[in-house]
Length: 506
Image (cartoon, rainbow, N blue to C red; front, side, top):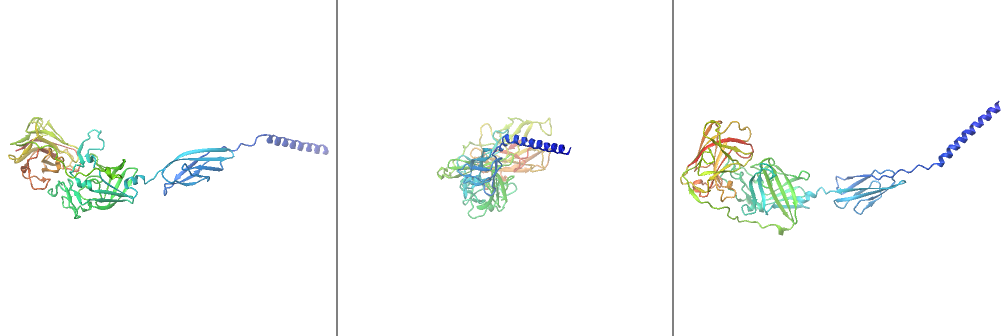
Protein backbone atom coordinates (compact mmCIF):
# COMPACT_ATOMS: atom_id res chain seq x y z
CA UNK A 1 0.00 0.00 0.00
CA UNK A 2 2.81 2.25 0.91
CA UNK A 3 4.56 1.48 -2.35
CA UNK A 4 1.42 2.35 -4.33
CA UNK A 5 1.12 5.71 -2.57
CA UNK A 6 4.71 6.59 -3.32
CA UNK A 7 4.21 5.68 -6.93
CA UNK A 8 1.18 7.89 -7.15
CA UNK A 9 3.02 10.74 -5.45
CA UNK A 10 5.89 10.51 -7.92
CA UNK A 11 3.43 10.45 -10.79
CA UNK A 12 1.81 13.67 -9.50
CA UNK A 13 5.10 15.51 -9.42
CA UNK A 14 5.91 14.32 -12.87
CA UNK A 15 2.61 15.67 -14.13
CA UNK A 16 3.26 19.02 -12.43
CA UNK A 17 6.72 19.14 -13.89
CA UNK A 18 5.40 18.27 -17.30
CA UNK A 19 2.76 20.99 -17.03
CA UNK A 20 5.39 23.52 -16.03
CA UNK A 21 7.56 22.61 -18.98
CA UNK A 22 4.57 22.91 -21.26
CA UNK A 23 3.78 26.35 -19.90
CA UNK A 24 7.37 27.55 -20.20
CA UNK A 25 7.57 26.11 -23.63
CA UNK A 26 4.44 28.02 -24.61
CA UNK A 27 5.87 31.38 -23.32
CA UNK A 28 9.08 31.15 -25.24
CA UNK A 29 7.16 30.59 -28.40
CA UNK A 30 5.38 34.16 -28.03
CA UNK A 31 7.06 37.42 -29.33
CA UNK A 32 9.02 39.62 -26.84
CA UNK A 33 7.18 42.85 -25.63
CA UNK A 34 7.48 45.76 -28.13
CA UNK A 35 9.68 48.73 -27.02
CA UNK A 36 7.92 51.91 -25.83
CA UNK A 37 6.83 54.33 -28.55
CA UNK A 38 9.00 57.46 -28.71
CA UNK A 39 7.19 60.78 -28.32
CA UNK A 40 9.21 63.99 -28.66
CA UNK A 41 8.18 66.85 -26.40
CA UNK A 42 9.80 69.87 -24.77
CA UNK A 43 9.14 73.16 -23.07
CA UNK A 44 11.28 76.29 -22.85
CA UNK A 45 11.75 79.32 -20.61
CA UNK A 46 13.37 82.64 -21.52
CA UNK A 47 15.62 84.11 -18.85
CA UNK A 48 14.36 87.27 -17.14
CA UNK A 49 17.94 88.45 -16.65
CA UNK A 50 19.11 87.75 -20.20
CA UNK A 51 16.40 87.82 -22.84
CA UNK A 52 18.70 85.98 -25.32
CA UNK A 53 19.16 82.95 -23.04
CA UNK A 54 16.65 80.09 -23.28
CA UNK A 55 16.44 76.94 -21.14
CA UNK A 56 14.93 73.92 -22.91
CA UNK A 57 13.47 71.09 -20.84
CA UNK A 58 12.86 67.64 -22.37
CA UNK A 59 9.51 65.97 -21.74
CA UNK A 60 9.89 63.21 -24.33
CA UNK A 61 8.76 59.61 -23.71
CA UNK A 62 10.69 56.47 -24.63
CA UNK A 63 13.84 58.38 -25.60
CA UNK A 64 17.39 58.18 -24.35
CA UNK A 65 19.24 60.34 -26.87
CA UNK A 66 18.44 63.84 -28.11
CA UNK A 67 19.35 66.03 -31.03
CA UNK A 68 18.46 69.72 -30.75
CA UNK A 69 18.46 72.20 -33.63
CA UNK A 70 18.01 75.73 -32.24
CA UNK A 71 17.13 77.29 -35.59
CA UNK A 72 20.14 79.58 -35.68
CA UNK A 73 22.68 77.04 -36.94
CA UNK A 74 23.57 75.73 -33.47
CA UNK A 75 22.79 72.25 -32.09
CA UNK A 76 23.06 70.21 -28.88
CA UNK A 77 22.75 66.59 -27.72
CA UNK A 78 22.03 67.45 -24.09
CA UNK A 79 18.72 66.35 -22.67
CA UNK A 80 18.01 69.79 -21.19
CA UNK A 81 20.23 72.32 -22.93
CA UNK A 82 20.63 76.04 -22.20
CA UNK A 83 21.16 78.08 -25.36
CA UNK A 84 21.99 81.75 -25.88
CA UNK A 85 20.94 83.40 -29.13
CA UNK A 86 22.98 86.12 -30.75
CA UNK A 87 20.05 88.43 -31.40
CA UNK A 88 16.30 88.80 -31.11
CA UNK A 89 14.11 87.07 -33.65
CA UNK A 90 11.84 84.08 -34.24
CA UNK A 91 13.59 80.70 -34.46
CA UNK A 92 12.17 77.26 -35.31
CA UNK A 93 13.54 74.86 -32.70
CA UNK A 94 13.47 71.13 -33.53
CA UNK A 95 14.03 68.26 -31.12
CA UNK A 96 14.71 64.76 -32.46
CA UNK A 97 14.23 62.22 -29.68
CA UNK A 98 15.50 58.63 -30.17
CA UNK A 99 14.99 55.43 -28.17
CA UNK A 100 14.51 51.68 -28.68
CA UNK A 101 11.17 52.42 -30.25
CA UNK A 102 12.69 54.63 -32.94
CA UNK A 103 12.78 58.42 -33.38
CA UNK A 104 10.29 61.26 -33.20
CA UNK A 105 10.47 64.99 -33.93
CA UNK A 106 8.92 68.05 -32.36
CA UNK A 107 9.27 71.61 -33.78
CA UNK A 108 8.15 74.89 -32.26
CA UNK A 109 8.76 78.56 -33.02
CA UNK A 110 10.55 80.43 -30.25
CA UNK A 111 10.33 84.22 -30.39
CA UNK A 112 13.12 86.16 -28.74
CA UNK A 113 12.06 89.76 -28.09
CA UNK A 114 14.38 92.54 -27.04
CA UNK A 115 12.56 94.17 -24.10
CA UNK A 116 14.54 97.33 -24.76
CA UNK A 117 13.70 97.52 -28.46
CA UNK A 118 10.82 100.00 -27.97
CA UNK A 119 12.90 101.95 -25.49
CA UNK A 120 15.71 102.22 -28.03
CA UNK A 121 13.29 103.66 -30.58
CA UNK A 122 12.50 106.37 -28.02
CA UNK A 123 15.98 106.85 -26.57
CA UNK A 124 18.41 105.43 -29.13
CA UNK A 125 21.41 103.30 -28.22
CA UNK A 126 22.50 106.02 -25.80
CA UNK A 127 20.19 109.03 -26.18
CA UNK A 128 17.85 110.52 -28.74
CA UNK A 129 16.87 114.17 -29.28
CA UNK A 130 13.46 115.29 -30.49
CA UNK A 131 12.01 118.61 -31.71
CA UNK A 132 8.47 119.68 -32.53
CA UNK A 133 7.59 118.36 -35.97
CA UNK A 134 7.98 121.15 -38.52
CA UNK A 135 5.87 119.58 -41.25
CA UNK A 136 2.13 120.13 -40.90
CA UNK A 137 0.34 120.54 -37.57
CA UNK A 138 2.56 119.72 -34.61
CA UNK A 139 0.03 120.50 -31.87
CA UNK A 140 -3.74 120.91 -31.61
CA UNK A 141 -6.59 120.81 -29.10
CA UNK A 142 -9.87 118.97 -29.67
CA UNK A 143 -12.79 117.52 -27.73
CA UNK A 144 -11.46 113.97 -28.11
CA UNK A 145 -9.12 111.67 -29.97
CA UNK A 146 -11.64 110.37 -32.51
CA UNK A 147 -12.69 112.84 -35.24
CA UNK A 148 -15.52 110.47 -36.19
CA UNK A 149 -17.07 110.58 -32.70
CA UNK A 150 -20.39 112.32 -32.21
CA UNK A 151 -19.94 115.90 -31.05
CA UNK A 152 -16.25 116.01 -31.95
CA UNK A 153 -14.91 119.57 -32.08
CA UNK A 154 -11.54 121.11 -32.76
CA UNK A 155 -11.05 123.92 -30.24
CA UNK A 156 -7.68 125.01 -31.59
CA UNK A 157 -6.71 124.27 -35.16
CA UNK A 158 -3.16 123.97 -34.03
CA UNK A 159 0.46 124.99 -34.20
CA UNK A 160 2.36 124.97 -37.46
CA UNK A 161 5.84 126.00 -38.52
CA UNK A 162 4.61 129.35 -39.87
CA UNK A 163 6.79 131.76 -37.91
CA UNK A 164 4.22 132.45 -35.18
CA UNK A 165 6.13 130.60 -32.43
CA UNK A 166 9.61 129.84 -33.76
CA UNK A 167 11.15 129.40 -30.30
CA UNK A 168 8.99 126.32 -29.69
CA UNK A 169 10.41 124.64 -32.79
CA UNK A 170 14.00 125.27 -31.68
CA UNK A 171 13.67 123.78 -28.19
CA UNK A 172 14.72 120.14 -27.78
CA UNK A 173 13.85 117.21 -25.54
CA UNK A 174 16.24 114.29 -25.12
CA UNK A 175 15.44 110.83 -23.79
CA UNK A 176 18.45 108.90 -22.50
CA UNK A 177 18.65 105.12 -22.42
CA UNK A 178 19.75 105.50 -18.79
CA UNK A 179 16.34 106.99 -17.88
CA UNK A 180 17.23 110.68 -18.07
CA UNK A 181 15.01 113.30 -19.70
CA UNK A 182 16.59 116.61 -20.67
CA UNK A 183 14.87 119.78 -21.84
CA UNK A 184 16.86 122.55 -23.56
CA UNK A 185 15.00 125.84 -23.94
CA UNK A 186 17.68 127.27 -26.28
CA UNK A 187 17.48 130.55 -24.33
CA UNK A 188 13.84 131.26 -25.33
CA UNK A 189 10.46 130.43 -23.82
CA UNK A 190 6.91 130.82 -25.12
CA UNK A 191 4.59 132.96 -22.96
CA UNK A 192 1.76 130.43 -22.90
CA UNK A 193 -1.85 131.64 -22.74
CA UNK A 194 -3.40 131.15 -19.31
CA UNK A 195 -0.01 130.96 -17.59
CA UNK A 196 1.88 134.14 -18.41
CA UNK A 197 -1.25 136.13 -19.33
CA UNK A 198 -5.04 135.89 -19.12
CA UNK A 199 -4.86 134.13 -15.78
CA UNK A 200 -8.03 134.55 -13.74
CA UNK A 201 -7.43 136.33 -10.44
CA UNK A 202 -3.90 137.43 -11.35
CA UNK A 203 -2.23 140.30 -13.17
CA UNK A 204 -3.20 139.85 -16.77
CA UNK A 205 -0.84 142.54 -18.01
CA UNK A 206 2.38 140.58 -17.50
CA UNK A 207 3.44 139.16 -20.85
CA UNK A 208 1.61 138.87 -24.14
CA UNK A 209 1.95 135.58 -26.02
CA UNK A 210 5.43 135.78 -27.51
CA UNK A 211 8.89 134.20 -27.43
CA UNK A 212 10.62 135.48 -24.28
CA UNK A 213 14.35 135.69 -23.68
CA UNK A 214 15.10 133.47 -20.66
CA UNK A 215 18.88 133.47 -20.85
CA UNK A 216 18.88 134.98 -17.36
CA UNK A 217 17.61 131.66 -16.02
CA UNK A 218 14.55 133.16 -14.32
CA UNK A 219 10.87 132.88 -15.22
CA UNK A 220 7.72 134.24 -13.53
CA UNK A 221 4.08 133.55 -14.44
CA UNK A 222 1.19 136.03 -14.46
CA UNK A 223 0.58 135.52 -10.74
CA UNK A 224 4.16 136.28 -9.83
CA UNK A 225 5.06 132.65 -9.11
CA UNK A 226 8.62 131.58 -9.83
CA UNK A 227 8.30 128.95 -12.55
CA UNK A 228 12.00 128.74 -13.44
CA UNK A 229 11.87 124.97 -12.95
CA UNK A 230 10.29 124.86 -16.42
CA UNK A 231 13.52 126.08 -17.99
CA UNK A 232 16.40 123.90 -19.22
CA UNK A 233 17.07 120.94 -16.94
CA UNK A 234 17.54 117.21 -16.62
CA UNK A 235 14.92 114.95 -15.07
CA UNK A 236 14.07 111.24 -15.18
CA UNK A 237 11.43 109.19 -16.95
CA UNK A 238 9.90 105.72 -17.13
CA UNK A 239 8.42 104.18 -20.25
CA UNK A 240 5.76 101.47 -20.04
CA UNK A 241 5.85 99.96 -23.52
CA UNK A 242 2.81 97.77 -22.92
CA UNK A 243 0.54 100.73 -22.07
CA UNK A 244 2.41 103.31 -24.18
CA UNK A 245 2.68 105.56 -21.14
CA UNK A 246 5.60 107.80 -20.27
CA UNK A 247 6.00 109.40 -16.85
CA UNK A 248 8.37 112.33 -16.35
CA UNK A 249 9.69 112.75 -12.83
CA UNK A 250 11.30 115.85 -11.37
CA UNK A 251 10.20 119.36 -10.47
CA UNK A 252 9.32 121.22 -13.65
CA UNK A 253 9.56 118.34 -16.11
CA UNK A 254 7.10 118.89 -18.97
CA UNK A 255 6.44 118.06 -22.61
CA UNK A 256 4.41 119.78 -25.32
CA UNK A 257 3.20 122.75 -23.29
CA UNK A 258 4.40 123.41 -19.70
CA UNK A 259 0.86 123.78 -18.39
CA UNK A 260 -0.13 120.21 -19.36
CA UNK A 261 -0.33 118.12 -16.18
CA UNK A 262 -1.32 114.51 -15.70
CA UNK A 263 -4.96 115.23 -14.87
CA UNK A 264 -5.39 118.78 -16.10
CA UNK A 265 -3.82 122.16 -16.64
CA UNK A 266 -1.40 123.78 -14.20
CA UNK A 267 0.07 127.27 -13.87
CA UNK A 268 3.14 126.21 -11.87
CA UNK A 269 5.71 123.41 -12.20
CA UNK A 270 4.70 120.00 -10.84
CA UNK A 271 6.83 117.08 -9.66
CA UNK A 272 5.62 114.55 -12.22
CA UNK A 273 3.52 114.28 -15.36
CA UNK A 274 2.23 111.25 -17.26
CA UNK A 275 0.93 110.96 -20.81
CA UNK A 276 0.53 108.46 -23.61
CA UNK A 277 3.08 108.26 -26.39
CA UNK A 278 3.36 106.26 -29.60
CA UNK A 279 6.27 106.21 -32.02
CA UNK A 280 5.92 106.04 -35.78
CA UNK A 281 9.09 104.95 -37.58
CA UNK A 282 9.54 106.60 -40.95
CA UNK A 283 12.29 106.49 -43.56
CA UNK A 284 15.05 108.72 -42.21
CA UNK A 285 13.15 109.99 -39.18
CA UNK A 286 10.78 108.98 -36.39
CA UNK A 287 7.65 110.70 -35.08
CA UNK A 288 6.75 110.78 -31.39
CA UNK A 289 3.01 111.32 -30.91
CA UNK A 290 2.21 112.60 -27.41
CA UNK A 291 -1.35 112.85 -26.07
CA UNK A 292 -2.93 114.34 -22.96
CA UNK A 293 -6.53 113.17 -22.64
CA UNK A 294 -8.61 115.17 -20.16
CA UNK A 295 -11.95 113.75 -21.22
CA UNK A 296 -13.50 116.59 -23.19
CA UNK A 297 -10.13 118.19 -23.91
CA UNK A 298 -7.57 116.26 -25.91
CA UNK A 299 -4.12 117.69 -26.56
CA UNK A 300 -2.05 116.15 -29.33
CA UNK A 301 1.64 117.00 -29.83
CA UNK A 302 4.03 115.55 -32.41
CA UNK A 303 7.83 115.53 -32.19
CA UNK A 304 10.36 114.39 -34.76
CA UNK A 305 13.86 112.90 -34.53
CA UNK A 306 15.90 112.71 -37.71
CA UNK A 307 18.51 110.10 -38.57
CA UNK A 308 18.80 111.90 -41.91
CA UNK A 309 19.17 115.57 -40.97
CA UNK A 310 18.59 116.68 -44.55
CA UNK A 311 14.93 115.70 -44.21
CA UNK A 312 14.15 118.23 -41.46
CA UNK A 313 12.25 121.23 -42.87
CA UNK A 314 13.77 124.68 -42.41
CA UNK A 315 12.51 126.71 -39.47
CA UNK A 316 10.18 129.57 -40.45
CA UNK A 317 10.96 132.63 -38.34
CA UNK A 318 8.83 135.33 -40.00
CA UNK A 319 5.07 134.95 -39.88
CA UNK A 320 3.09 135.92 -42.95
CA UNK A 321 0.11 138.22 -42.55
CA UNK A 322 -3.10 136.40 -41.60
CA UNK A 323 -6.60 137.09 -42.88
CA UNK A 324 -8.13 140.19 -44.39
CA UNK A 325 -8.54 143.67 -43.01
CA UNK A 326 -12.22 144.55 -42.77
CA UNK A 327 -13.84 147.90 -43.40
CA UNK A 328 -13.88 150.17 -40.36
CA UNK A 329 -17.31 151.40 -39.28
CA UNK A 330 -18.31 153.64 -36.38
CA UNK A 331 -21.65 152.49 -34.92
CA UNK A 332 -24.07 154.34 -32.68
CA UNK A 333 -25.36 151.07 -31.28
CA UNK A 334 -24.76 147.32 -31.49
CA UNK A 335 -27.47 145.23 -29.87
CA UNK A 336 -29.39 141.95 -29.75
CA UNK A 337 -32.51 141.14 -27.70
CA UNK A 338 -32.26 137.38 -28.53
CA UNK A 339 -36.05 137.35 -28.92
CA UNK A 340 -35.55 135.99 -32.42
CA UNK A 341 -32.86 135.43 -35.03
CA UNK A 342 -33.56 138.89 -36.46
CA UNK A 343 -34.10 140.93 -33.27
CA UNK A 344 -30.75 142.71 -33.45
CA UNK A 345 -29.16 145.94 -34.55
CA UNK A 346 -25.99 145.28 -36.53
CA UNK A 347 -24.64 142.63 -34.09
CA UNK A 348 -26.35 139.51 -35.38
CA UNK A 349 -24.13 136.55 -36.27
CA UNK A 350 -23.98 133.97 -33.48
CA UNK A 351 -21.26 131.32 -33.59
CA UNK A 352 -18.57 129.89 -31.31
CA UNK A 353 -18.21 126.75 -29.21
CA UNK A 354 -21.16 127.54 -26.94
CA UNK A 355 -24.20 128.78 -28.80
CA UNK A 356 -27.09 131.01 -27.84
CA UNK A 357 -30.49 129.63 -28.79
CA UNK A 358 -32.79 132.54 -29.56
CA UNK A 359 -36.55 132.74 -28.98
CA UNK A 360 -36.85 130.52 -25.90
CA UNK A 361 -39.28 130.92 -23.03
CA UNK A 362 -38.34 133.40 -20.30
CA UNK A 363 -37.45 131.26 -17.23
CA UNK A 364 -39.03 133.85 -14.92
CA UNK A 365 -42.21 134.52 -16.89
CA UNK A 366 -43.48 132.19 -19.59
CA UNK A 367 -45.75 134.94 -20.94
CA UNK A 368 -42.95 137.46 -21.30
CA UNK A 369 -40.94 138.28 -24.42
CA UNK A 370 -38.75 135.44 -25.61
CA UNK A 371 -35.08 135.44 -24.60
CA UNK A 372 -31.83 133.69 -25.44
CA UNK A 373 -30.66 130.43 -23.87
CA UNK A 374 -26.90 130.13 -23.39
CA UNK A 375 -25.69 126.54 -22.96
CA UNK A 376 -22.17 126.15 -21.63
CA UNK A 377 -20.66 123.09 -23.32
CA UNK A 378 -18.50 120.60 -21.42
CA UNK A 379 -15.20 122.24 -22.27
CA UNK A 380 -12.51 124.45 -20.78
CA UNK A 381 -12.73 126.57 -23.88
CA UNK A 382 -16.18 127.84 -24.78
CA UNK A 383 -17.90 131.04 -25.74
CA UNK A 384 -20.62 132.41 -28.00
CA UNK A 385 -19.50 134.85 -30.68
CA UNK A 386 -21.35 137.71 -32.36
CA UNK A 387 -20.26 139.83 -35.33
CA UNK A 388 -21.68 142.63 -37.43
CA UNK A 389 -24.31 141.18 -39.72
CA UNK A 390 -24.72 140.57 -42.60
CA UNK A 391 -21.18 141.65 -43.49
CA UNK A 392 -18.51 141.57 -40.80
CA UNK A 393 -16.87 144.92 -40.03
CA UNK A 394 -14.12 146.28 -37.82
CA UNK A 395 -15.82 148.26 -35.07
CA UNK A 396 -14.81 151.84 -34.34
CA UNK A 397 -15.64 152.88 -30.79
CA UNK A 398 -16.01 156.62 -31.42
CA UNK A 399 -19.61 156.61 -30.15
CA UNK A 400 -19.50 153.60 -27.83
CA UNK A 401 -18.90 153.86 -24.08
CA UNK A 402 -21.05 151.21 -22.36
CA UNK A 403 -21.92 147.50 -22.50
CA UNK A 404 -25.10 146.37 -20.76
CA UNK A 405 -26.92 143.03 -20.71
CA UNK A 406 -29.56 141.19 -18.68
CA UNK A 407 -28.65 137.71 -17.41
CA UNK A 408 -30.52 134.99 -15.54
CA UNK A 409 -28.64 132.23 -13.68
CA UNK A 410 -30.76 129.25 -12.55
CA UNK A 411 -29.87 127.71 -9.20
CA UNK A 412 -30.33 124.30 -10.80
CA UNK A 413 -26.80 124.56 -12.17
CA UNK A 414 -24.22 122.62 -10.17
CA UNK A 415 -21.97 125.17 -8.48
CA UNK A 416 -20.53 122.72 -5.96
CA UNK A 417 -17.46 122.06 -8.10
CA UNK A 418 -15.46 124.21 -10.50
CA UNK A 419 -18.38 125.99 -12.16
CA UNK A 420 -18.40 129.65 -11.19
CA UNK A 421 -21.27 132.16 -11.32
CA UNK A 422 -19.27 134.56 -13.47
CA UNK A 423 -19.96 135.96 -16.92
CA UNK A 424 -17.26 137.23 -19.24
CA UNK A 425 -17.76 139.57 -22.18
CA UNK A 426 -15.10 140.70 -24.59
CA UNK A 427 -13.92 142.09 -27.90
CA UNK A 428 -11.30 140.51 -30.17
CA UNK A 429 -10.14 140.42 -33.78
CA UNK A 430 -10.93 137.21 -35.67
CA UNK A 431 -10.41 138.47 -39.21
CA UNK A 432 -6.66 139.11 -38.92
CA UNK A 433 -5.63 137.33 -35.71
CA UNK A 434 -5.27 133.58 -36.16
CA UNK A 435 -5.50 132.96 -32.42
CA UNK A 436 -7.89 135.71 -31.42
CA UNK A 437 -7.84 134.80 -27.73
CA UNK A 438 -4.23 136.01 -27.50
CA UNK A 439 -5.33 139.59 -28.15
CA UNK A 440 -8.58 140.46 -26.42
CA UNK A 441 -10.30 142.92 -24.10
CA UNK A 442 -12.49 141.27 -21.48
CA UNK A 443 -14.93 142.27 -18.74
CA UNK A 444 -15.99 139.89 -16.00
CA UNK A 445 -18.62 139.91 -13.27
CA UNK A 446 -19.97 137.36 -10.82
CA UNK A 447 -23.75 137.02 -10.47
CA UNK A 448 -24.71 136.29 -6.86
CA UNK A 449 -28.49 136.64 -7.25
CA UNK A 450 -29.83 133.41 -8.74
CA UNK A 451 -33.21 132.68 -10.34
CA UNK A 452 -33.82 136.32 -11.19
CA UNK A 453 -32.88 138.71 -13.98
CA UNK A 454 -29.82 140.84 -13.24
CA UNK A 455 -28.51 143.72 -15.33
CA UNK A 456 -24.73 143.92 -15.83
CA UNK A 457 -23.09 147.14 -17.01
CA UNK A 458 -19.46 147.73 -18.05
CA UNK A 459 -17.33 150.72 -19.01
CA UNK A 460 -15.84 150.08 -22.46
CA UNK A 461 -12.66 151.96 -21.50
CA UNK A 462 -11.99 149.83 -18.39
CA UNK A 463 -11.71 146.12 -19.28
CA UNK A 464 -10.61 143.68 -16.58
CA UNK A 465 -8.26 141.90 -18.96
CA UNK A 466 -6.00 143.26 -21.69
CA UNK A 467 -4.09 140.39 -23.31
CA UNK A 468 -1.29 142.46 -24.77
CA UNK A 469 -0.66 144.17 -21.46
CA UNK A 470 -0.08 147.48 -23.18
CA UNK A 471 -2.60 149.57 -21.21
CA UNK A 472 -4.85 150.03 -24.22
CA UNK A 473 -8.63 149.69 -24.41
CA UNK A 474 -11.06 149.05 -27.30
CA UNK A 475 -11.40 152.75 -28.10
CA UNK A 476 -7.76 152.83 -29.22
CA UNK A 477 -8.22 149.99 -31.70
CA UNK A 478 -9.51 149.86 -35.25
CA UNK A 479 -9.36 146.11 -35.86
CA UNK A 480 -11.77 144.55 -33.34
CA UNK A 481 -14.62 142.74 -35.11
CA UNK A 482 -16.05 140.15 -32.71
CA UNK A 483 -17.94 140.32 -29.40
CA UNK A 484 -18.05 137.18 -27.25
CA UNK A 485 -19.90 135.90 -24.19
CA UNK A 486 -18.81 133.17 -21.79
CA UNK A 487 -20.01 131.74 -18.49
CA UNK A 488 -18.81 129.55 -15.64
CA UNK A 489 -15.05 130.13 -15.63
CA UNK A 490 -12.33 128.10 -17.29
CA UNK A 491 -10.19 125.08 -16.54
CA UNK A 492 -13.12 122.65 -16.23
CA UNK A 493 -15.76 120.93 -18.34
CA UNK A 494 -18.90 121.40 -16.25
CA UNK A 495 -22.00 122.09 -18.32
CA UNK A 496 -24.40 124.89 -17.43
CA UNK A 497 -27.47 126.72 -18.72
CA UNK A 498 -28.10 130.44 -18.29
CA UNK A 499 -30.32 132.96 -20.05
CA UNK A 500 -29.56 136.29 -21.68
CA UNK A 501 -31.50 139.25 -23.16
CA UNK A 502 -31.18 142.87 -24.14
CA UNK A 503 -27.48 143.09 -24.99
CA UNK A 504 -26.74 146.72 -25.82
CA UNK A 505 -23.37 148.21 -26.76
CA UNK A 506 -23.70 151.99 -27.14
